Length: 482
Image 1 (spheres, one colour):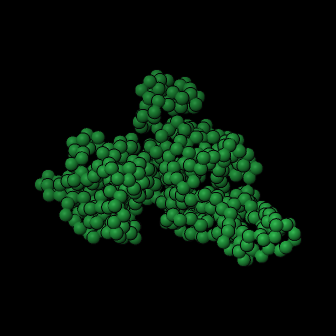
Image 2 (tube, one colour):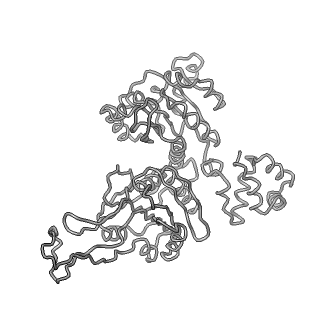
């Protein structure tokens, strides 16, 4: 396996060529060869992991954490990839490349339409094994391959998924190899749709989408952007890396990969809070809730028992065990403590720091149960007194029912890392995720760039989809629970 030219640094971190050779009971020349070839033999990988654990050294930063070789496999893993027709079919080649970096056993089926964009020969060359294209094939059907392909995989991934395959799956149509095996399988199915924006928003497509969601089919929803057809809107295939990460998450939930999150209780707070000034005015912030929702969804996908406590948002709710809606900071504080104890808490909500209490300088009492009118008396000046809201994160971290792992967020406009580290220390929490909101590009966006900070280190995660951030954070938590 290739580890991006980091083998030499990894060996140095573990004590150098001689020390690693001594601990693994092999010749120093073998270690030198690893460094030269930038490869670690598969039969030595687990020994290297054991050595790093013995030395209490975290080597994750030297490894591709999306590579299944960095995870304990509980059994042989099989995935079936179905490639449907559409210009995005070429992106399936990147998904194949990512999967081939792992130990997943990959089978691939192509529809007739997909072959208009990429060839079975190309797919066969990349995967190193036969690409299936025909339902009625003497060679294949003598082995009942449409049944074998349907029953063999742990997960079936359809990428790109067209409106046509969605309609077939929703209606139970089986008129080619892909649709027939989908009807004959009991494996988990993941669809990554890609189509024209008007086609995606068509009432028929959305009805099929909802039908499949209700049946337990998982979607990696299409993204907004410019399309190959020249139009713009929602319909672009999600990033191959995001689709790949979603696949890994479901494999972890099925416990075919090492998963320390299965059955663990988690509280996630998300979204903004609102502090009323009067019945029509309030103070809030620009948080959309997308990052917190992505984290809650990712942890639930891995089998965690997730309670999501959310302020007012306008995005679809994730599938988690329990959702609690709140409005104010005090309500979020009360509901959070009512859900303790829990193993993990992740405070991703953008909680309002203060309430604003209206006052007049002439001692006239303001009834904020009614709308505050414009002042007619020129001698009267309306001012606002601030009352600090409770600090949910710090309070949870210092309660007797403190969770095993307390994680917070830090939205900063300057001195991002230093300010976040100070919060980490003062609030006595385990991890903090910091980001720069000085230009407000994070709020409402699907993308985020963050720094993951603990008492000993700071990791910079480049700008990426918030769902990818959630995936990496879940991996980090999974490792911490080992």
